[in-house]
Image (cartoon, rainbow, N blue to C red):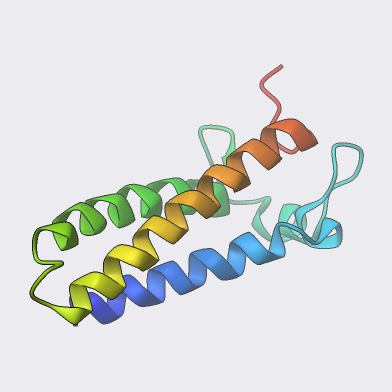
Amino acid sequence: MASILFRITVALNFFRFALSFWPRFEGTDADGGIADRLFNPFHHSGFRIDFVWLVISTFAVCLVTVLSMASIQKERRARINAVLGLSWMIAFAVYIVRSLTGGILYFG
């Protein structure tokens, strides 16, 4: 059950990552997108709740990935989870770099 929950979390994160490449959803530095209108009432420390979800879930994915590495030789499920976790961490790094260079995240 935990493995299924992990895979659903990674799938949701990849879906949100894919939507970030659509300017109409993510918005630009000059104009807000669908995500700004959808998640605008929900902020935590100045960040939209979808961004907070990505950060928190990425920490959980990192933890599960590290734990999966311990049994990677014995279990097929652990190998799949490790590959999914590493793939998500790479995608998250791309998302953060893209957000910082694209003007979506701006710290003043």
